[in-house]
Amino acid sequence: MELIYLLLLFALLVVLMIRRVPLWASMGISVLLGFFLYRIPLKDVGQILQLGIFSKATLYLVLAFYSVTFLQRMMEKRDHLRLAEESLTRLFGSRRINATVVPFIIGLLPAVGAVLMARPIVDTAAGDFLDAEERCFVTSFHRHISEGFLPTYPSIILAIELSKVPMTHFVGAMLPLVFLLFFLGFIFYVRKIPGSRGFKGGNKKAEVKHLIISLWGIGVSIILILVFGLPVHVAVIPVLLLSFFVNRFTWEEIRPMFITAFETKLMLTTVAIMVFKELLAFAGVIDSLTAFFSGFALPPIVVFGLVFFFGSVLAGGQAMIAMMLPVAVATLGSSLGLLVFIMSTVFIASQVSPTHICLGVITEAYGLPFTSLIKKTMPVLLAFVLLSSLYSYVLYLIF
Image (cartoon, rainbow, N blue to C red; front, top):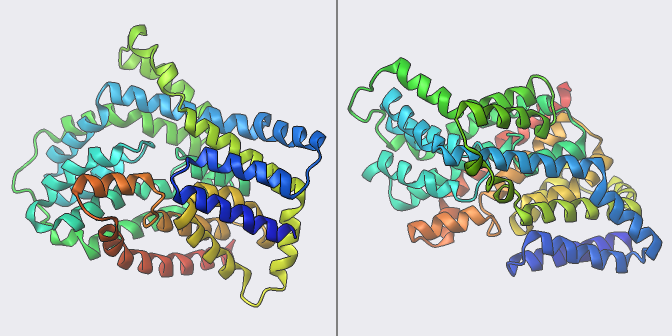
């Protein structure tokens, strides 16, 4: 019955997400139904809520999201992402670099509107060499590559926390797939764009200096996270303090950011997800699923791959990570290969998901139907699923 109840909770979550109910509300409603279905005693409901809301893991997640968003607000205030794009243009003078690397840089920090910032850059770089559907794909795809591996995104932080795989190991293992994504984008579409813009850049040293000035906050944060193994919020806080002085912020500029950096929906989603995780653990769902999959006809890794892919398409990657990653880890064990496989699957599924807000935003901006973006994404999706699965299997054998 535990498995049947889980299917009911999953179905409810999918229906709510399809009906555009926010993820935090969808997870909250699923939690309430879970309390009822699993017949959790009232005293234990309080314990589950306490563990989900006030645990150290939840606190660290909330602090990580808040600190990263605060850094993003500071960069927006000084227009650093736009300045980085202009420096790259003058530095390389390449249409292809502007169409791919600039959207990638813009996507280094999480923001729904970033895809709209990348659009005019891609349009200018691609010109008439790509049609509207292809420009839409290139804009969306390259802006989102960083979401597949960078620990400034909620889904990555959550997955690492739940799997207990070291952050440095995960990021290092994902880098070859990052290059693969760029390569696939190039093979299918970007190669149609001429390599040169037809002019020479300016002072190279000056442009490199401008890039460093614009992006040092992101770079230092990532170095502190990956090299020194610091939690995200611990790594970003000194960067925020340093940026205050380096970029000469005034108190009047900073003060509103303490409020705007607190994205209520993101925080509520985080809390709801962690409570849901505690509910599954308390109800013994993970143990039941482990026993269930041990006797399944298909290899469990194949089953999980299908579940994560279609679940991410319908309900979003963050929800699937929260619901099913603990189950996958309990069934197959925590390993680098497993996490790379799951996160690769979640990433590519998110690029065709109707619940992915950015995809709706960019197709609307181009005046295209959502299906046009899906059509352009499918060749890349199929190639990436095959190659990333083989790569993950090799990692599993080695580590």
